[in-house]
Length: 123
Length: 176
Image 1 (cartoon, rainbow over the protein chains, first blue to last red):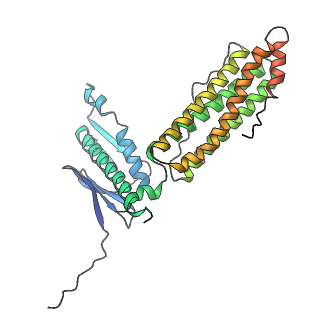
Image 2: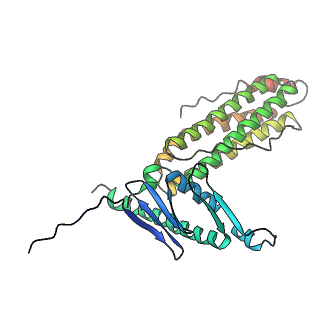
Image 3: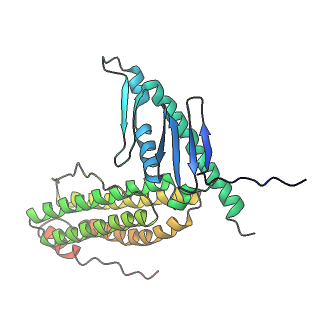
């Protein structure tokens, strides 16, 4: 029987780094960037911007916001300098995005360890 | 999946943060020395003022050395805010005692970075830090000798004038 020829499309390949019920982060090796699927949009972040996003999200004091009884809107605007995307998040979304980022960075660390152990050792 | 994080930057996030703290510390040190130089000059201790001007410049160089290292390794070097610089001192001796205290705190904080590097086997940064350890030997030696002059010469009579004259002559030339 003749083997069917596999079709190959020039598609940018994504790999899921980490996902939760509320979103997911993918890595594109060819573009050297990450795609964040969260709050209804897919946004592209390069290395610098991903770190800036992480810093911006981690710097929000969630506990203080939860305990605050101010009559202000429960919304946080995450704006990153020199980045095409910004987020306007409710407190719940903020917690979810933080969870997503935390998981992602653990996975990236793990990937680094795997690389060191498997590919970078002299065999 | 490629290890993009490592490809972009040699430093771990923790080490980068620690070095950025050190950059701030060196900048702070430099400003303190400048304020000490100002105090000494205002009070007539010309040689000590020169000594502190030189120290301020050295600390600034250390700051830049750390700064450039972070950038060279692909990290993000943060230009620090420098605030709360003490401008007044109660006595000539207090200036030198605080200068020594400052050097000790710098040494301790570099040791702290080295400890972290050991933990994560960052031998590259560790090797970079060696230069600073040698430098701190000299800095602490000079600061300690300066404070000792107050006991050796004594502050009575023309003592402080003598101390001021000798401060600039302290040098460290150990080859060890």
